[in-house]
Length: 580
Image 1 (spheres, rainbow, N blue to C red):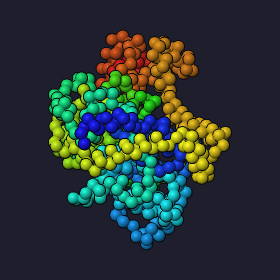
Image 2 (cartoon, helix red, strand yellow):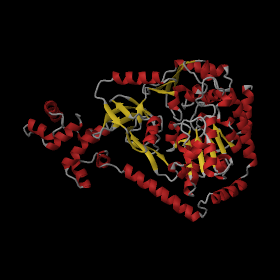
Image 3 (cartoon, helix red, strand yellow):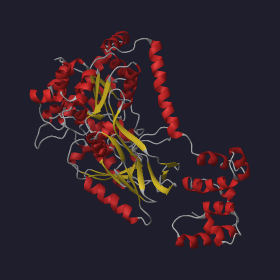
Image 4 (cartoon, one colour):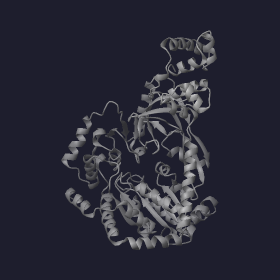
């Protein structure tokens, strides 16, 4: 198809807004939620999940890969359905699955199934999920008669298949189960990631299967882009071996003590192993001051997203890394939890780890779902259609891209995915024209009734308030400021230590001790107002160096005695804040 015609088609159809897609989801119809990278598919899913939970409707949140599943606190569709790594299911195997209580418990109760990143789910696997639900629900309707929501983009990474397996034998939309479900297509296009029209156009041209001379020239120019010195871009490769080699080599170049953080797991052993393989934070995180790192989890309260880059500039007394983002902001990276939950929100398995990974390099596969500030991308070894599109669509802007190389495959898309995408666009347009708000609202009310969910608005609001209160309590418990942070708020106002101590109901010595930790946690903070005279700092430093050779533990008393009591304990503590 001519590229110009593709753009005219896109303009004519205008596609679907998030609000309309959410209305269609609420109506209880089976849905395929799709659109290019960065159009807010996950946002819409989360809106719908919360809507269902507020109404006590049993919803299962799953994904085709562990990485995608951890983004949504769900589990892989393989684990949830019990199909595992099988290629087919016999009746005997189905009967055996039904004897497993943990499977029967959630499969029989589920009313809505969400499968994210469906592009990476093999058609055989989708057929088996359909089989399992029909068997457990004793209902031969598609997926046992429940609502099924597929989400994804078939221009992204395809399913892993057998050697020489054709696309039509792999893609989920080619399965009988998909056809039986007959999902309403909701095609989103409004961009929430890219703010660069040049990059948008290149991505659209890749999707159209026709790269213009102008787009090709811009990609060639990207080989010579110079990224601002204060931004060290993440390097993306198609193969793990390149990523591991670079990250380990770069870490080894840094002099200084290496600190290790080992993940803590709880719950079902198999599910814990699944989390270890899925969570982007490594099981053993090795860091040094100066290490380039990437946050691998969204944290809106701290102003970081999955993909935020920075460098380790220090460690707290608890060993937590202080990370200076490229924006200049410094954040203490605290341990977070990833979990796999059942439909009632109960944890089946959990993993706690600092949400960081070394970020000199990362694979294209693991970058899926991330937003990168800047990247050096090597696509010269691209071996699968979709890899180039995924890599380029991680960025917000073309100016922060250095494209070190690309081969012919890097800019290719699967021809079957292309044809299907055009049809999805047409079907989305038809759905938007045909499905009116009044009809959808009426259907939504009936769907909740059919699911035995809450329909009384007062009860819904009560449940919503309880859920909100629970989240708020958890947040307050997690984010309750430490005594050091409270002191820091006073010190930022340059309040004398004596007054800070009075305000806090503590003695001056304690506040002086706080200063040591605060200076470590916030090395960028200007606390020079409290710095003692140079002669005192010099004396304390000499004494500290001498006593440190005799004992690894910091001892204020040893320093005091080394100085023959000529410098007070309080002044020693304050001086150490500017030495350590």
